[in-house]
Structure formats: structure tokens, C-alpha cells
Length: 484
Image (tube, rainbow, N blue to C red; front, side, top):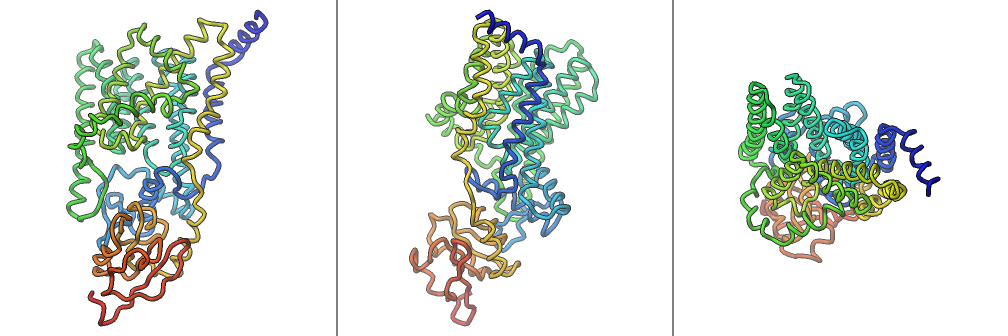
């Protein structure tokens, strides 16, 4: 036993916290290079398709930042109100250099994830100790939720990154007093909140730190900055709602479902996922869950109000958005920061106090990546038909032709085809295609031959279907018998 303890003491003295941080960042990046150019796939493929479509439409149609466009636009121009489209726009700028490639989005997500890991370390070091920051960084790298969305064509990791930058800058302001740090914190939080308003969950620990600040002038300025961030973020989403009404576009959910939160909030599903299942399974992962639980004990003993308020702020955000937060797990990304800090507190406490369990802690840390990759493996799919669908649609359908597409979502097939038009959801009958066919669409795309599903389009005459990958493409024959 003494030899084991001696070897662990040598490890303790030979390695610095930066070794863990570097290993976490390098390991995370290397494991995300696989299929870097993969098209939207797997879990939340529809959301990836929506995001990538807006980027492609910037590139192909109009680089006006304030005019993001969706594909499911009917016969309109598709301008839509949405979350702050910074992620989409930067990817579109990359398209102008490299050409359209899904690797552009995934590289942007990966870069933001790497920055998040580094900032997580800096926050832990600033609040507690370099070792606690390093363990928190390691916990974030192998959080199943963070690991999965660190490879997705979605802006949510950017939201988390700006939120963490805001936290670090805020802590620097509180310790150094420089208003430049407060300005940087406010700007980063504004970017986070306009990408996803859930980033505002950090206002709870901010309020605690600001309230305990003895300088009244600084307290007043920080309060004004927080109010300004909230007002500007709210103004952006109101602008998005105005754009949706102005252009009559489908848009994104910009608070339209917030009024539904009471019925979701009191459902068993909300509490089951956000209190019993996701904290251990998705947020921290089963391997590192013991460290997190130990961290709860340490934080309770330290009476660390800021950390607990951070968790409370996140849960309040989940409650307000409960119509989505129990079904869209990426809404819960903001809680990863305090959860990983708990793991950092617990891991360092156990390491320093109980020498006999150090090998167990090392094993837990090394097993965590494997547990994470096994947990999210089922969420990743191959989309072998993507390129064939894109190429064959280019050969059969003119670029500016409107289409009617049958699919289960509103975004995937239209993005694969790289065409604009109308969507028939699978629960609708083919007869609902009449609206699109009567408003200029001349192609009907279905997943099965439409007359095998529904024969309610007698007023329209189509050429025999041609195949686009697994899809059937019907071209409308326009003559006097069509009631267009």
C-alpha cells in the first residue's frame, strides 16, 4: 500500500493541472475529427438541417445578415425571424472561401467547444483552485451532452461558450475592478442570450456576486449592464417576431410556446428527466457522477451560494421553457458549467483527503471517455443517400423550381434536395399538396409512390415518377385540365 501511495504522490507532484486540461482538449478534439464533413444525421437531424439550410441560403441567395432564409418557405422569399444567426453567418463566410461544406459548421462547433473547455478551467481556477478547474474541464469534456453537441451543426455550443466567457470576464471584473472586464462580460452574455436566452441563467450568480460587492458605484453599473443585456436580448427576439409577421414566414419558435409551460411543468416527464435521469446520464455521465455527488457535499459545507444559485437559475430557465426543455436536451446545456464545477470540487476533495481512493479516481477519470462514447453512439447515423439526393435533384429539378415534399419534419428533405417550397407532414394526407401545387410548385416528392398512400389528387396530372435516391419525384404536367 505504501508503494502505491508513494507512486500517486509522485504523479501528484509531476503533473500540473494544465496537463489534465491539455489532455482533455486534445482528446476531445481528436475524437471529434471523425466524419468532420458528415451531413446532418442522427438525433436532431432536423435541427442540423434547419441550421445548415440557413447558411446555404446566405451563400446562394443573399448575405444580408438580417435576412436569414429557410427552405420551408412556400412561394415566399423565406426571410425569417430567428435566434441571432452569428453561427450561420460565419459558416457562410467560410463557404465563400472553401465552398459549401458541412465541415465548416462542425469546425466552428469544435473550436467553440475547445474554447469552452479552456474557459471552464479558468473559471474553476478563478473561483477555487487550478486543480478544481482542471477536473471541471475534464468533466465537461466527457459530459455526454457536451460531447454529442460538440459535433453538431447547431449554434448551442456557441451559446454555452459565450456564457462561459461572460462568467470568466465577470469574475475578473469582480476581482480586478476594471470596467473593461464588465463590458466584455456583458457583450459575451448578450451574444449568448440572443443565440439562446437560456444563457441568462448566469444572472443568478452574477446578482449574488454583485450584491456582495462593496463598491456602490460598481454595483450600480453592473446592475445597469445586466438590465441592458436583458432588454437588448428581448428586443432581438421581438424583432424576430416582427420579421415573421412582416414576411409571413414560418420562422423559429421565438417564445410562442412560453404560455404552455404550466401544463408541461406539472408533468411527470419534466421532473423525471431533469431531476432523476439527465443529471447523471447526460449532464455528467455515470462514470463521473460520484465526483459530482461528493461536490454537492463540499459545496454545502463551504456554503457556496453562488454555485447553488447558478443551478437554481438554470432550473428556473428550464421551467420557463418546459414545453421544450424536457424534449430538447440541448436546452439544458447551461447547467453543465455548475455541474462540472461540483465534480471538480468533489474530485479534488476526495483526492486530497482520501489517499486510499486515488487509484479509483484515476480509473474513473480514464473510464469516463469510454462511457460517454458508448452513451451517445446510438445518436449518430450514416446518411449514405445525402450526396445522391443532392446530385440527382440537381439533374431533375431546376434550381428555382418550387417543390412539395412529404417528410416527417419540416427541414430534412428540403435541405437534402437543396430546394425551396412546401412540406406535407407525414400525418397529413397527400391531398394537402394541392395548396402547394396551386401556388406554383411543379414537383411532388414523396417517400413512397403517392397513389399507394392517397389517391386524392385527381385534378393534377403527373409524369411517371423518377427516383431521387430513395424518393419518388413527380413532375406536374401543366395543361388545361389542371386546375391551377
